[in-house]
Length: 265
Image 1 (cartoon, rainbow, N blue to C red):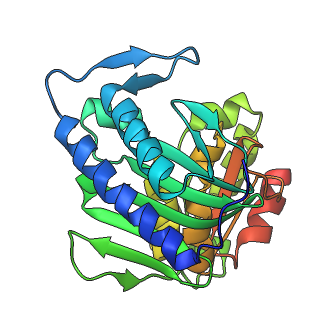
Image 2 (cartoon, helix red, strand yellow):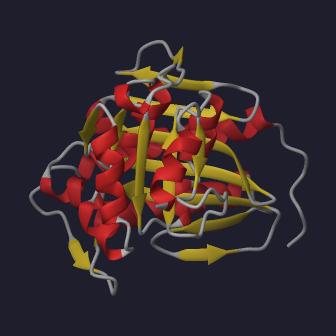
Image 3 (tube, rainbow, N blue to C red):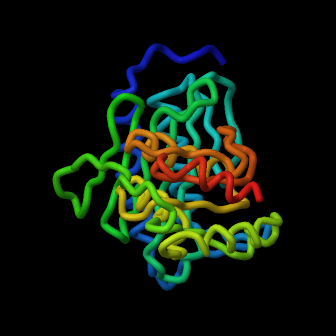
C-alpha cells in the first residue's frame, strides 16, 4: 500500500480517542456478564468475546478512517504495509477482565517509522482514560470529567521511589528475578499494580518505576507517548527502544539510568 496522507498528530489522536470510546462501550457491555465467552490461546493466555469484538470494531473503523495505514492487533495479527501502523491491544488485562478485576482496558497506538507518536489507554471500569501525543502533552480524564494534564514525579532517589514490578514469574522466567529483588531492596516501596495501570501511575507521578517481561508491541506502544509526554522514559530492560524485545521499564526519567544499571547486575 502507499503511504498515508499527511494527517496531523491532532487528527490521529482524535481518531484514537474515538476508537477508545467505542471500545469502552463494547467491553463494558460484556464485563461481568454471565455468558462471557472465554477461550484458551496457543500461548495459554485467554481471549474473550469482548477482545475479539473490540478489535474487529477498531479494524473496521480504521479501514474507513485511515485506509492506507497498517494495523497490528493482539487477536488478529498484522495487516497492511505502511510507515504508519496502528498497534492495538483490545483489552489489556484480559485475565482481570474475565475475573472481575477492574484493571483492564484498551491500548491504542499509532507508530510512525517505528516510533510511537499517539497513545490512548482507556480503562472504563476504573473510570479513567489517559492519552498522549508527540508535542501535545499527556492527559488524564476521570469519570467523564474535564481532562487535565499529567506529569511524572520529581523523585530523584531510589530510596524514596515506588516500584511496581507486575509479575514475579516472568522476571524469574527471563532470569532477572534476583536483580529485581536487589533493586527492590534499594527502593522505598514495592507494589504490583499490574498491566496498564502501573505505567499510567508512573505518568501521573503517583509511582516512579514500573517494569515487566514477556510483553509484546501491543502491550507497550500506547504507553510510550503518554509516559514520554508526561516527562518520563520508556525503554527495554537493556535501554533500547524497540517494541519487540519482550521487556519494558518505565520511570520518571530521573531514576531511569540507575534502574537500568541495577537490572544489568
